[in-house]
Each structure stands twice: as structure tokens, then as C-alpha cells.
Image (cartoon, rainbow, N blue to C red; front, side):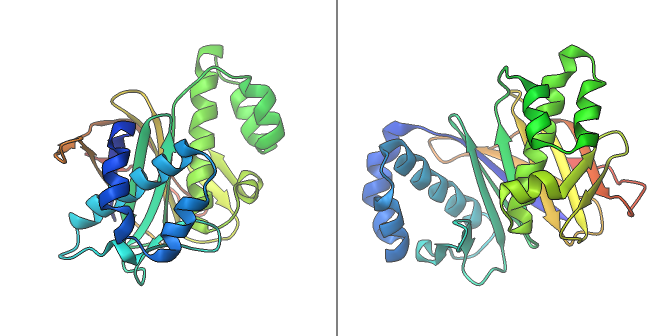
Length: 248
């Protein structure tokens, strides 16, 4: 199962061009959604994400129609009839898109100091909190962001709220497995980008190893291979042994 990952740095200086060239090509409902955002930054990031998605789709499809992008009832972005499943995430100035042939979710986070154990106690399952508490202090923050990104990506792939994913999906990083509701063939991968960002991808319906193909799009539109590091793959608890992801 190949999942295409596209990265791009958000450059606000490009917004006027996007608003002039891309916005009129979107579906009128999506244009209205864009204009409804109260904060300029939200509009800028939203439009930049659509541009990244369309550029990534153009690498897979013979023809791409910007008007075929639409948002579902939860606000998740979709393309056309769904033959290509897509997901978007951003953190800071980094945008990430994931494309697959099955339901997919992606999340990216920049690691920042935080009260990880205290926040995990409010958000994660008991087993996940115990896992973090058993780690060496220097590893707790990495463990927290690994779990957090997996849960966010799971919510998107499953089409549920983040709160449902926080309590309904339990990730065992020791056993490399996930216990999740709704039940399905879940395949989850966590990696670090070359610049240290946490990135998680979850796909539904993949009964074999996920292969991540990651490229970063430059401002000029060139696609550069992005190395992914420290790959961890998790499968359904009943689907052991877990199959390592292929990253490249």
C-alpha cells in the first residue's frame, strides 16, 4: 500500500497569487468557506493547503480539476468521487498532504516543550499514560507527540472527532499495535522528518505494509525527495506480528 506524502513550507508572500489564480477555480461553496474564515492567517493556510493538494494530485492523475475539491460535513477535504483519498494537516509553517487509494489520515506536529504527563492524563488512555510515565525523562516528549499525531491521524482516517479518537484508539508502542473503535484493518505509521517534525499516517483497509513516498514541494514547484526517519508501524492488536513500514 503506497501513500504519497507531500510537504510544503507555508509562504505567506504567495497568498496574493493564490487568491488571484487558485481561489476563482475552486467550487463556489469552497470559495464561500474561504471567505467565512474570520482570521487572515486561517484563510492563507487553508488556500495554501488546497494548492499543495492539487499539486500532489497532479502527480497522480492525468487531469486535475480544482472545482472537484470539496469539504465534507466534518470539514475534511475530499476530491471528486473519492477514487483518491486525501488528508491535510499543518503545524507552524509546515503543510502536509497525504494521498492513498483507501481512507487515509495524516497529522504533523512540531515538538514543543509541554507538561506531557499532565496533559496525557487528561487526553490519553491509562495504558498510554503508564507507557509515558515509564520512559526516561528525555524521551517523554517524543513519546507524547508520537501518540498525539497517531490519534489525530486516526481521527481523520476513521472520520470521527479527535475526542472520539483520543479515547477510542489505544496505541501500544511497545507491542506495535493499536486497539481501535471503529474496528477495521488499521495500519499506522509514525516517522520523523529530516527537520525533526513528528508525522503520522493512518490508513484503513490496508492488510499489508504501508510504503510512504515523501516529497517536498519548493516555492518554484519542484518536488524534492524528503527523507523520513525513525519509522514505527502499528497494526491491529489481533494482526500481529506488526509489519515494518517501508520508508523512502
